[in-house]
Length: 288
Image (cartoon, helix red, strand yellow):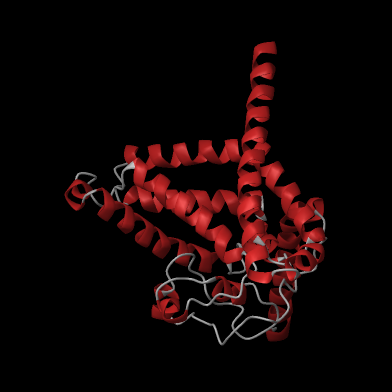
């Protein structure tokens, strides 16, 4: 028992140390980017975002120590299930003919297609309460990428890994997908006024994704892709009328603190169920 406790403490400590290193590297890179793009305004923007940054950091370290190990186990379980039940659609050997570069590009592109639809599902009433936490950041920075509820993290990991595994992609290419989505995801959450010009019709830009986080405006339920904007254009969810200067956040009433946000889905789901049943009862009473 003592060995188990000791190992758990060491594992948690290592996860925390790794999280600190990853955070420091990202912070240096994005702070430099902010200074280059905004100059003196970068400091003022950082001050405005201070409260939201504290929440994001709290959720980030909570995830690194307690949630990430569980997600890793879920991913392994999903992959074994896909293999064990013969759910692989594309034989893995097919990707050998495509080559390493072709496989990597295909994995990222197809993975973004799957995540586009998964993201749209997260905006439906069923999963929105857990996904709303990510959208509650009113001052978007690269740290907004880490503002996720554990339930949202789990559903994202399970759906994405199941789809990629079913496509028969080798493990190394799946790692590439998650790396690209992670680092590019940080970039498109950064507060930089870049639209990409003509390339906006191919790739998701920071401004395009900022419109996805807009509050109470036409187009806030749009721009679901992470890497390739072609999916939003193909399925008519593309929205980027110009620079996004409107307020960000959600209309949901939730505590701005990290604890309140972790609790929010467990409060919102019962309320939604209660309102739905009450509405059904009223309809039934009106027809009798």
